[in-house]
Amino acid sequence: MVSVTPEEAGWRDLAFEVRALAPGAQHAVDNGVRECVLVVLSGQVSVRSTVGEWRQIGARASVFAGLPFALYLPRETSFELLAETRAEVALGWAPAEASYPPRLVCPGDVQVEIRGGDNATRQVNTIIPPGFPCARLVVVEVYTPGGNWSSYPPHKHDRHRVDEDGHLIEADLEEIYFYQFDRPEGYALQRIYTDESSPMHQAGQPLDVVLCPRHNDLVLVPEGYHPVASPPGYTTYYLNYLAGSAQSLANSEDPRYAWVRETYRAKDPRLPIYPLR
Image (cartoon, rainbow, N blue to C red; front, side, top):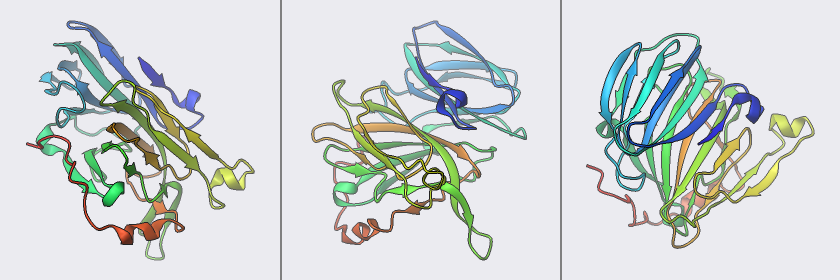
């Protein structure tokens, strides 16, 4: 199991864990005042809860074998996972001030986009989009073919900003990256860096690091820009959970690199990485 709590992360909202379950294994959870999104990474599970029951959720052998099933469960819900097969499940939580209806997200509900171009092409599967009836959580998964970049041009979401008309132009979001690779020895490179507008930068704590996440690693993004590079020969997968000042993906690109978008000539033909339907 990999996991992180808000206290361990040093932030306010997001908690996250991934559980590997043997066939027949059970796991009980009490959400308390938090809402939860469960994503079946592989295998099949059933869920029995105080707000409903869902049987045999999940159909893919791995994250590289199809679109996901997911389940949204509101605050003040207790539930139990039962592994129908060997399964791997991601769970993410964020505080919620109100209760929303539970909802099963099936593969046909997932929004698929081939984003970017050239060697910045990637596949984005939006599981819990902005506008989903919940309090804070947004959930997406991203596939980056070998030699490509994603989360690029670099973007950030570390200040809550609105324009003169009151429209949100950037949200203050915490973000988790959970990585897997199509071969177990795979790895990615991720840079996280702040600029002068960042609250950390203004507090005299600028951030500029390059990380090397491997299979089943977590990367925490409290602030700053956070592009990802996938080495040749390997497809990089990451699952993103976000939560913060708005149920939104509003962000700002690093203006020094935004020009690259105008140079794209074509989409990478390796995407999508599997039949979508």
